[in-house]
Length: 196
Image (cartoon, rainbow, N blue to C red; front, side):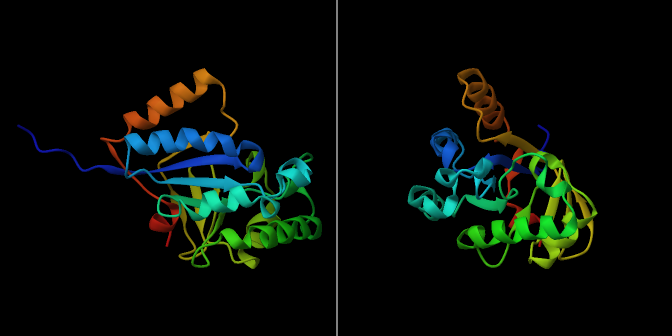
C-alpha cells in the first residue's frame, strides 16, 4: 500500500459578501457541518451598491455573524460600493477617499490588524496597491496571485472563489458538492495562515 501523499493548502474565498446576501451564509454553515475544519475567506463590500440598508456598520446581524464564527471565517475588504465605473480605476485622490471610507466602516471586522483586499471586478490601476499599503492592508489579491505587504513578494496561491449571490439552487448544489469533494485532498486555510 502506498503512503498518502501530502495534502496541499487551499484558500476558499467568497466575494461580494454584504447584508443583502447574509442569508447565503446558511450554505456555508451546512458545508461546515460536513467539513468541520473548513476555513472560508469572505471579501466584504461595506456599502454594497451604495445602499444604506446594505451598509455593514448598520447591520447588527452581520456583525454578530462575524463575531460568532471567527474561528473559521476571515473577513477582508472588497471595495467600498462595488459600483460602476469601477472604483479602483478612479484617479488616486478619488480612489483613496473611497478606500478610506470603506476602511473606516470595515474597522470593526479586522482581527489582529490583519486584512487584505480584492478589488471589485478585479479592476485596479497603479494607485490601488499603494493605497492598500497606506491604509495598512496585509495583501492585495487578484485571481490566484497575492501581493504580500509583509514580505514584499508576489505569491501564487491555490484558491477557489465563489460569490455570495450564488443563491440559485443548481449553483448552490454544484459549489457545495465541489467544496465537499476537496476535503480529503486539501488543508483549508485563512489568508492570515498563509500570507504572514
